[in-house]
Length: 273
Image (cartoon, rainbow, N blue to C red):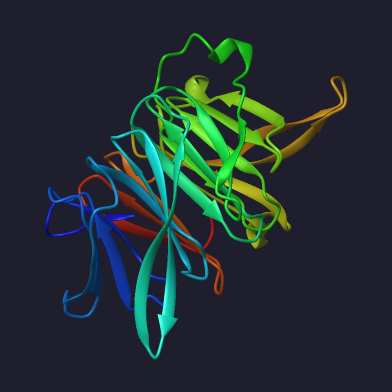
């Protein structure tokens, strides 16, 4: 995710020749060419208020947005005779406050949304219907922080939800796998990425968190024999930035981690020891 010259936010398209931007005063979504910033499409009348977040499927067929109107909207992209059309196929209602983050997976046919109402909801992408509200652990129910990040692992379907310093991992069905409070390690979590084929640490799934003080942390799984359950262990840490880490991205081939911060500085890592 990056900031555009218009003060909005955006993310690259699946082909990386265009980018999608949102957050404009007219509540529009704009698709532009990366090379020259020329607008190719403008999508309007999606939300009744400001668009706070946006996600797309890996194949670029669906755009999911969350607004200050507490609604999640789903659009399907159709291509006919080399012309693209954007069909609004569903409004998803269930939150009581502004949507702060969304994630979508076509492989697992789910959408996950987080909100200022401190809740996360799983939706069915195919049926465009409510599936489940994720139940936070008891120790977190009195923490009145908005959900800041949701993520779906495209390989195993695991769902990550983050607010303040808490990181929760759920199965694709919404069952809690583990939870960790990173407050004992570092500042609040401001960005996240993960992989299921992480060559740096012997092919174990790796979860990477960026934090408000510029630190990047790398986590992996361990089995707690005493309690007979999975938990996360911290395997690496690096003070990478002087400002909040606002974006993390892992490329596949070659495996490189890119990190960006609040002042626009981007770093690249091909190892993380």
